[in-house]
Length: 165
Image 1 (cartoon, one colour):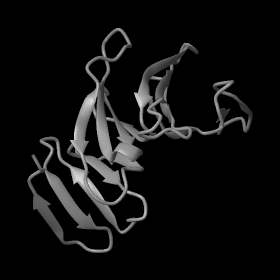
Image 2 (spheres, helix red, strand yellow):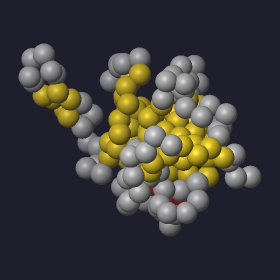
Image 3 (cartoon, one colour):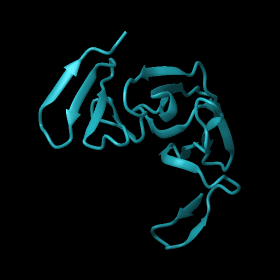
Image 4 (tube, one colour):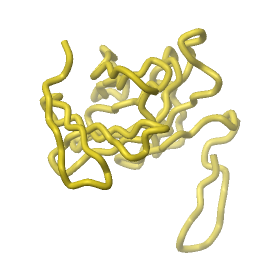
């Protein structure tokens, strides 16, 4: 991973030795960089990883059992990472502990149909917006209480439904 200083125009290796398949949708919080290494993982090989590169220069693997981790985003108070798990068609919730570790990683939402999540972001109300590939005209918005909002990006109309049980 290469870092680029916008003020000086200089580039440098930010994290050395990472495979070329890594670094989907990196996010920065408190000077720490969080990113995923998807590789060729999937349900057949659930060894995808979620990393943190700390402001102090320490690389830590937070989770190493993800079947195809892709998009990654932090909630507004930066206490939880959400990871798009493309091949499992799910979004995982990764609570960040005060000591820098993670605990009780689990499925935040299990999606159905189509393909799994790709990019993600957090909206103004701390709701999770998930974009699924090959459906670039649609997005799924998951409000803080995990209600589903289906919306077409080229339409102002939205349909809301309760999540499947």
